[in-house]
Length: 301
Ligand code: PMP
Image (cartoon, rainbow, N blue to C red; front, side, top):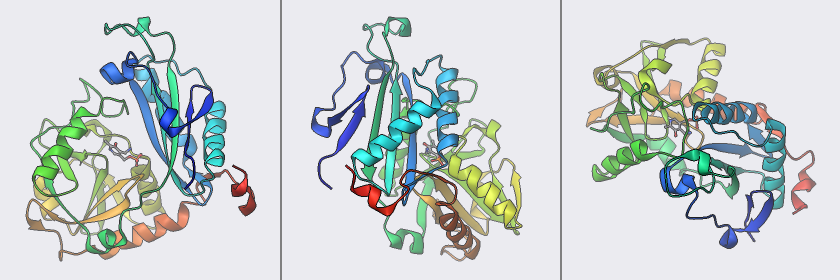
C-alpha cells in the first residue's frame, strides 16, 4: 500500500501528519465514541447499523455528532477511495474535542472526527481451522447500570484489562462474566454456545455490546432454521456446550475449542460453527453498501 490518508476534521492528511491536541478529551478521559466497520470487496458491511450504534452511543453520553448519517457515509466512501481500498477495516472515531484540563465536556469546542481505513489484518486461516483456546478472567464486565457496555465509547479499559489477563494466561481472547457470574462476552467479541441444536447468546441485559455480527448471526441462524435463544448462561453451560464460537467485525465467526482447560465438544471447530461461518461469508457482500460501482473505480485515488 502506498501513502495512507486519514480523514481528520474535514480534510485528508497523511498518516504521519494525522495528529490531534493533547487537550482532546478523547485522549485525556476516553470521552468519545467509535465504530469498527468492515468493507468486503467494495461493500461496506452493515453500514447503517454501525452508524445507528455510533449515534446511539453518542446520544447516551450527550455528544452531538456534527454530521448526518449521509455525511458520515460520504466521508467513509471518500476515505476508502482516497486509499484505494476495496477490502478494509474502517475505524470511525468521534471524540468530545479539545477542552481544558477539567472533566467538564462543555469546555470542549467541538467534537473531532477521525476516519482511518486500513488494509485488513485478517486472522490466519489456521486459527479458523484449529479454533481458539480461551479462558475466563477475573475482570467483570462493566455493569450496565454504571457504564453501559452498549455504549461503544473510547473508554475501553474494562476490555483492555481482559486482554491483559488473557495474555498473562497465554491466550489471545477471554470471556468475561457479569457481576452475577453469567457469561457476558469476550474482550471485543460476542459469544454463542450451541447446546442440543439450540443456539444461545446472552441477552442484552446481561451486559455486552450489541454486536452487529452477533445480530447478523442471529438473523442468519433463524433463516437457516436454527432455534435461537437469548438466554443467560454460566461457565458450566459453556464447558458442556456442543460448540462455542465468538463473533465480531474483525473475527467474523470463530470457533472456540477449549475454555479454562475444558475441551469443547470434540476439541475442534464444530460443524454448525463452520456452517454459520460459511453462510456469513457468503452473505457479507450482499448486506453491504456498495462503494465502488465498477472494478476500475478503485484506481481513482
Ligand atoms: N463486544 C465488544 C466489547 C466489542 O468491542 C466488539 C467489537 N466491536 C464486539 C463485541 C463485536 O461487535 P461487532 O460484531 O459489532 O463488531
